[in-house]
Amino acid sequence: MVSVDEVELLPDPDQHKVLAATLERVNRASNLARAAALSAGAFEGPPLREVVKGEVERAKLPEQFVRLITERVAASLRRRAGKQPKFSTYQSLTMPASAYTWKTSDRVTMLTAAGRRTVAVRVDRSRGDLRPPLAGRPASLVYRNGEFELHAADVARSDDDD
Image 1 (cartoon, rainbow, N blue to C red):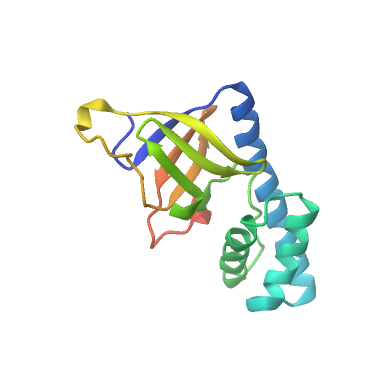
Image 2: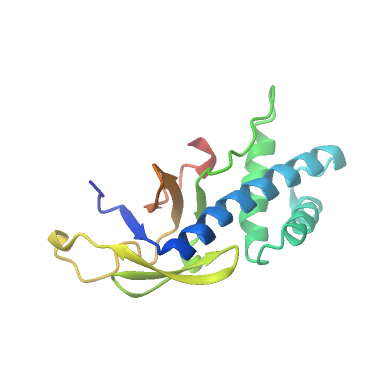
């Protein structure tokens, strides 16, 4: 059952591939950026951003991902004690509200590795609200059991705690 804070995405096969590629490429770029940052001693600020920007360009991701990856790599580097866990292939990705455009309640245009894509969503009509369910809220792109969902992001929780 999808709650008020979750939206099930209904991508067509091509959109499904783009969403999967987005998670794969962002997480791979995050791992490479974290490794490069560790070797360069860039743990925050402009030096870290430059390292991340280079990895985003190499991964051929849109520039909008630089800030997102910088934030998640910086959070990972702050938890440096012991062995560093890697970002898993399909680990969720939290994006700000500006990464999503809700023109109607049953479709969302979102940032992907291939630019912006409009994806249909399943809306729970029983909630009695005509507004888009996650409009104006940061959300995490989650891949679970072969399906994609958007979850309202808890501001106090990082997407890396999954």
